[in-house]
Length: 101
Image 1 (cartoon, rainbow, N blue to C red):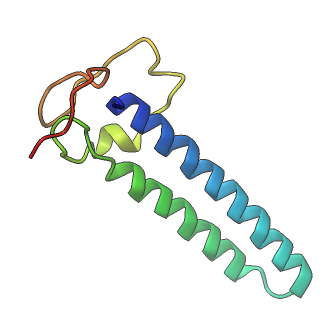
Image 2: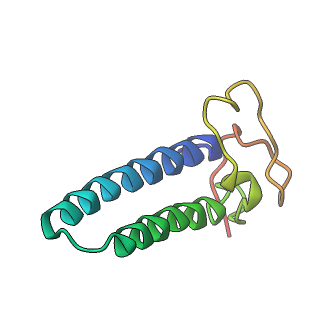
């Protein structure tokens, strides 16, 4: 079983690795085709917005509710010594408990 903290950390790192990889691929394509750079910038912005939406919609493993702002502003290193509660169920994110409907 995973805790909500582990899920948030996984989403944070996977999302930003995806943005960096996509930016690198698009930069390579931009140099290859040598076209106007507006589409490159647009695709990078779309990728970053997609990561923010995914973080915003990260769900609590205890109640299944989206973490919203807490998920959006999550920083793994800065939150290491603090265990904030879920905004919906008020259980701390380090608690191991399976999600039940």
